[in-house]
Length: 292
Image 1: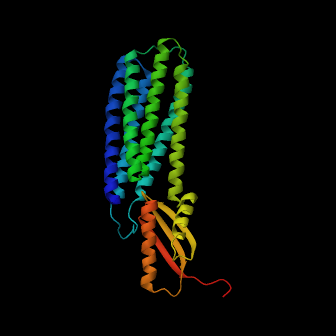
Image 2 (image 1 turned 30 degrees about the horizontal axis):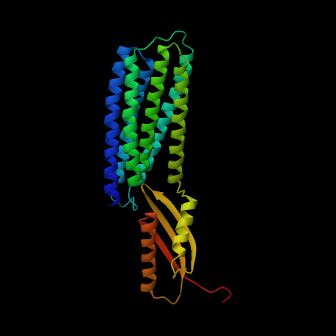
Image 3 (image 1 turned 90 degrees about the vertical axis):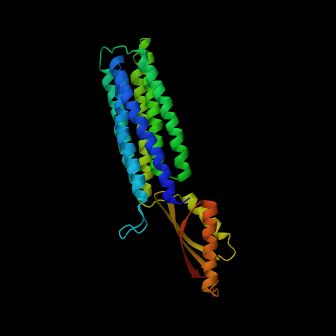
């Protein structure tokens, strides 16, 4: 299955998130209005903004599937990373808003007691989002999609928000009103931490960063080839859901062009089988004995 097919599979996860968020947002806003719960109302508005983030991921996946053109010779795969970055900004905004709302609630002298229906709605929403999170996370790992992984982390954050709302509402039933702001503060911090991690990974990818440990594993794999005298350099960068690797190796200068080409084909096979790397640019240089 090629990268375009994988990205098309990823669109299913984005559509699942969009559908779930729309249904949950409408349900929460209605139940919150009849059940007198500000926390559930805020959670519903949170899901409304999540629809925008999921649409951004969907658009990023669709753009990534476009074939290379005169301007984008390597394709449009980085549109997916930009979508992850956009999702991180929305998550950070939501996290900060949750924290601010928590502090604002501490200034309110009287907090109305919400109906228990709002609590069951919140915990039911958490279970739904947990299912969506597990589905999207599994799919993101299968197709190596950064934007779908960001969407999955957003799904998990929303599940935690709903759990926090549930705890706060149940606490209000027993007069423990401080549980609501405490849960809100913890959830807000978790959302901001998740957004920061996604933002950091996205910026590293967009600035051509690559995992040093992964490069070292690739170097060791290439060094095992008996015809490779020395691995001079290995570089890598992430382009959407695929890694682009640049390699410079030294080989016997007496080899023919055809024999050298066979070495590159063998290395490409190593990289695909052991590291799932589908694109590698291998530069061959003649090996010279030291001291000669």
